[in-house]
Length: 547
Image (cartoon, rainbow, N blue to C red; front, side, top):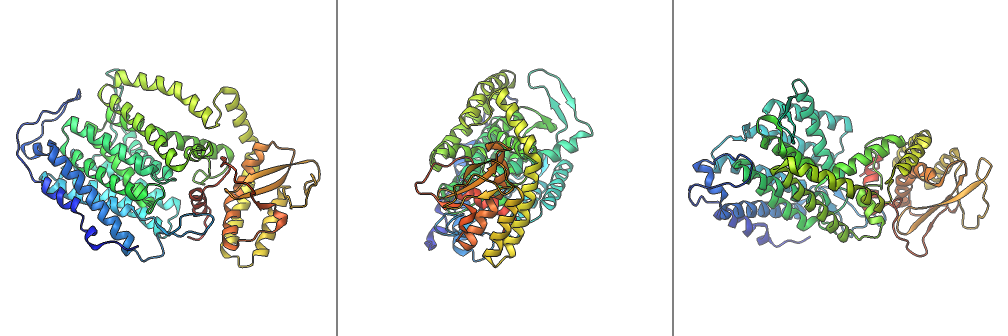
């Protein structure tokens, strides 16, 4: 990709430096119902419109320039998602190291806070501790983008970061009642709660980063929310960092909007999660779980709901909690017929509504929280029904009983698929691998429907039903399944084999007729069992395929 040399020296960034020059230190009145600290003479200039626009332009310009440079100069094969014609449908290779732009903005924001505000602290926390802990999480994710890091090793580093945050003063020491005046000292649980906070928020962003523009858009709205709260509280360092990160999000979305030309990767997702988690704690004075954290939790309602449903679904089904699937909320929204762009705008509408509710919670939690709760009680069942999820007690009971009934079978099928995934990585003879897959299906009494096969029997004898699986927009997998389990139960079991089957098709192309995989004559709409290109990419990584 050719880039004009002059564009790499961003005029927006140069304009930002000019606007950031202090224009005076007059008294500034900070509005809001919260008790706002009075900015010092050295900080007061920051609250002018010129300074805020300068910070925004500086963050935007730096991120834009870093992304352009990265796209032009990156020469490593690692850190790149290459198209394969089936699983990854982009026309050109796409970098997954866009987190470098966020890290550049994060670094510059910390240096700007140190130089422009003349303070080595951000809300009472050492600026160096704040920067080093964020750097640790970013480089952890960046290394995972390049080489792959075991999940337990990543968890250990996240625990160490949470412990470091606790020792640096970013801790959850007091839990307050947002409606009343009571508070509880967390005591010895403060360390545990802080560690869980710094594990949960970065991983929420990582899990939601499954569609172009989704995680970046959520980060954009949260940066706006945190900047607005910092402005109302008179917290200059947090305001500076949040506004510059906001500029970084705007620049990144310019390249990440569908069809994406760069992905943020795990490094970017972890750093954004750290930014949100740390700033929320710092803004909560004296480690109190106040309206700031409650507002952030409300704003994160979409990924919290998505992650909670995924954990429940995978836990009850018997697959590992970190195993990817095609049943996230954005996949289900695509299944009802929304294009990626329409889906993204609809999701942004949800983010904007949650951010508005969050700001109301920040200013008046006693009045806003009951309203938020009432809205959720009304909207939640409607959303579940629209997404074809269980939305009443009977359907929830049937779904849970069905998952538990097939848990043993799903665990067995998943174990077999893991062995096949390992075989696929090293196999060179396609006929041998397809034979192994056929033998694995026979263990579950499954048989592919050949083009001229009309018989209902199963390998183990007895009655069977024909079940069609939409592997992709162009491929259908027809399997004869024993009648001992329902259609939905068999879908949960056979879904374990989707990634390895698609991986083999991408590697060799041709498929034996007896497996029952054929091209679709007329493209059918995506269902929750379909795997989009991005979903297949996630599944490929989760099942250990070579990058």
